[in-house]
Length: 236
Image 1 (cartoon, helix red, strand yellow):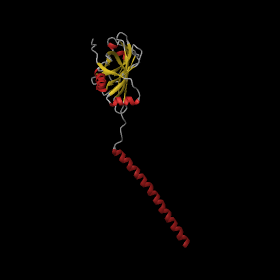
Image 2 (tube, one colour):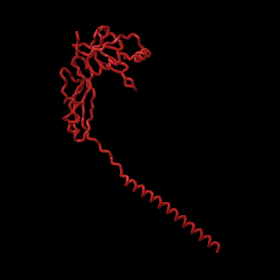
Image 3 (cartoon, rainbow, N blue to C red):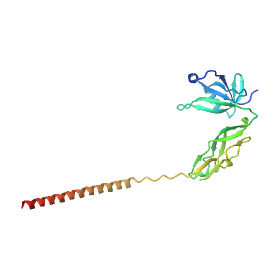
Image 4 (cartoon, rainbow, N blue to C red):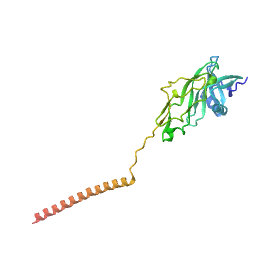
């Protein structure tokens, strides 16, 4: 019986090790594991990289992982990406029971930023929380918690207590301590001195140096005249 959930078919993986995983990735496969199986085992599998990417982008939190003809309801536990290319290189799933609530994390998406009065007045919206801890049945886990910030004014802060949870979802974070977003007043950068002012300062410094050199020259000239007078007196 079809579940209506997105399904990805994967193949069992019995070989392990760095060389094996490198060879798999060159073949366009992503290694992965499934935890929390009823058998108590950790199942290793390999999935087509393109198909896996398509499923993860277009699917909700709950996915059917089809392995050896059996569809297992799973959620993503962890993903590892290549540090340079950014491609998915390993994925962990957790098998879940559809009739038992589980605890997991979901992303926070804000909307209505441009309509917020505080932003229109020149403020900048800063999102403080990007993930929320929730509890829900696997079938009730949302793709994301969408938060409307269109009513936020300048220097105002929105806490989790102002966000209504979706049906069947319980927030586990402290509603009064968890800050979702705030609109801050941008700090003014100090003005740089104008070019004319800088030129004037440089000119004054140059004049002062020239004056100092002139004083030194006068003193040398006076010393020379005194020496000449002393020499004339000796000769006489």
